Amino acid sequence: MALDTTIATPLYKQLEETLLAEIENGTYKAGMQIPTENELSEHYQVSRVTVRKALTSLTEAGYLERKPGKGTFVANPKLTRSISSNILGFTEICRMMDIVPGAKTLKIALEEPTDKEAELMHLKEGDSIIVVERIRYADGKPIMLESNKYPESFSFLFQENLNDTSLYQILRTKHGISLDHTTRTIDIVFSTAQEAKLLEISKGYPLLRVSSIITDAASSYTSLGKQLFIGDRYKIII
Image (cartoon, rainbow, N blue to C red; front, side, top):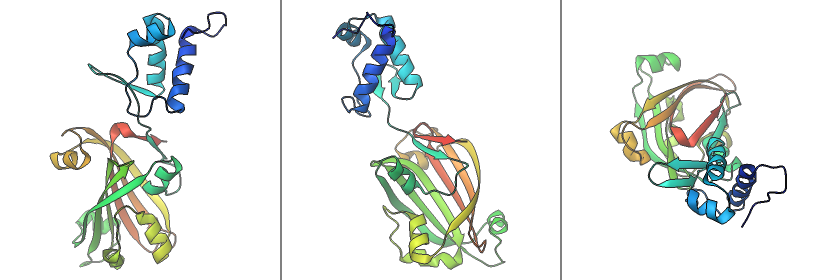
């Protein structure tokens, strides 16, 4: 298949648009390896320089990813979240992007808060907190570890099935609790052996850590959240 040499559009741009159309129509699906530079060069009757330029452009745009020694693959879509937006749960973000969300509960427990947690959550001496830890999945693949800490009044969560469900939706629809405001901080950390095992990555893999201080609409309680995202599968918009 030859590209059109009679029009003003550069050949690399034509090839880029052709490959992008094949990604979008499902000819090349997420995670699939595309043909080699030599194969594309022969198929489209263009030079390898032209092929390389088109692939570089698609890689920089996030449609492709190159794996040294293995080849070029269609990139998995990154979950996108605006850090300045109102509170939006992981489940809602996935559904907006036509991705199937999932969750597995690792822990739900009544614990004693640290001094810092007690201060941030405005707790009285002797108060306990509810700690909920889960793995979150996108299309069946682990993408994030989350930890949420609530006042002891949230003990009703022990009666809830928190697997494959939205915690925000449970709070909002079943218990009338509306999350209203959050203060977030973001930094990069590196996975521990335990985190790596749960997320199916190598130890020391970069993780995006989002720490949140969340209040309800009536400012009657404060909760704390921590999310550890696999760094190259998630995008934050400032």
